[in-house]
Image (cartoon, rainbow, N blue to C red):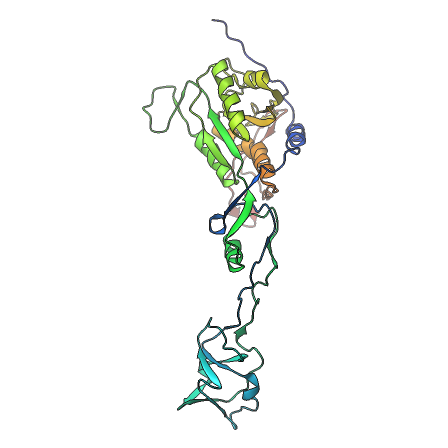
Length: 356
């Protein structure tokens, strides 16, 4: 049997690849909306602004344990001139959070009161609405709680519920089809033979998708068969927003991903001058983005961060978070390949005043 090797179509710089990819994905709109319970919205992205339906609190509430009073009846109270107020008439017992009885407008803390029979004795006047949480102190009805395209945090859930929101509209999670390929790939836990590779990349890439706000559907491992791979990719492009093919994008005799994508659609990028990650493929089938990742796990993770993360964020209507950077000194010399932009995994520690 005659085997042929495929050469890289583009073999361009990372900056050029970014330019081509972002020009392609910037035409995409967020992938629809759905209504969900606020209680289940952690990490989701708001599809529209969320406003308060009620004020919080929606009644005047006591901020302390003590007695609700008419502040005007406390005027003149001092250590030399205590003021007495009749219980249940001029002074009503309240606990923290209780509604302030109608007509009352201040609270005196229980520790500032002396009980004297059916009266309380105070030695300091109360100011209007002292120790009272007034209507709308936290949230005012119609007030903006969250803007559109906001990633929901736990504190946001509390604010929305306090503002009377039970359901909200959020961006639909982009669905990514993940297709592992290769005769040597076996499921985790399966009996191993020499030459087998455990399918760890599917779960690594799938959980990156979840972490970024999408959802993934893992396909069964596709054997090294060009026509079979084409059918799997075509089916996936019909049923998902993005297709990710694991391995098969290099220049080996069994690397069929570039041929399959080219047969079905358009190859935008195949081959980038980076190390690791040179075999990455970026393409389009039926107007759906297709990413072919290298089989080497470090390269797969890195290139998916480069090209998958901004795509998923685009489909969610948000901007990717900026990557943190820092300056450090290498502990030993590194010889990089000429013509490649190389990325190294490192551990960072502080030695004296320097990061090494």
